[in-house]
Image (cartoon, rainbow, N blue to C red; front, side):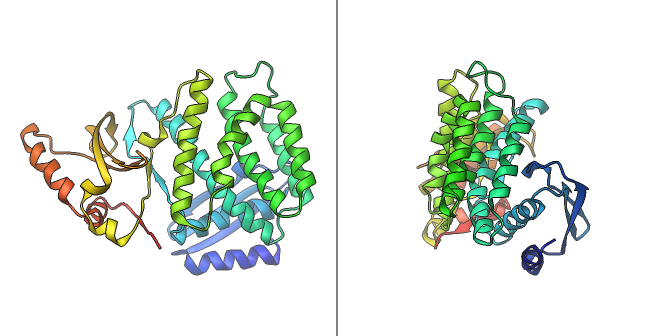
Length: 323
């Protein structure tokens, strides 16, 4: 572990409620795969383990920066309070939504790592090698691997965008040209999907949230055009709101509409009601009404009059105060 990573680890440990430790394995296959990093918790300890030492500082640094972002409450987080009562389908949707959210976070973490000198030509080469190790080349455009390639290409677009900002324009261009040749349909879709991420002010929590919502929306538009099933992450995924004091103190009815969902509330096992933002139609909370139908009119009337802050605290949902 280099001194820079040790400094970053110390910074995390100043905020983390416990101890974060890092372990790197002895393998070295020349490919950079961010998904190799695994986190495991034991009591107050968190272990970040990377089995392969190829560009291990970048992989560890990425985990540490993302951990800092979550600890500092800068980035809206995602939660999964709904289920289709189909473990396989739920697992797919959670994986897809998590990867979309992670790509937005990577626009922040990659940039921070580049500023600290962790993003080099060698890093870029290992990153591309990881892509080519993970994906099969496209043969007939949209096939059963299209979504998987698209999610990988989205992250690659964020990586290339970061390289361009930090003196690696030629390497970024070479990476994009190679991916365009090898994965043309997924590459084109990912370039469009990455636009709201790369153009957002990712120092502002509200702008980060808007980028996440746009990516959720954009993926469904791409999948519809490709005649593939949509993810509908805007309803399935609960996303941390970014609100002003005035909004937090105002009634729920000012900001949200509560809809009956065909999905099930994971906690109550009842058909769920979802609070969607009036402006962006994004799931902000999931709520279970009384089982007795006769009690529901009063429940919803009181819910709509409840201050937003009180509702979120009652549901134990975090929120970010807008600056």
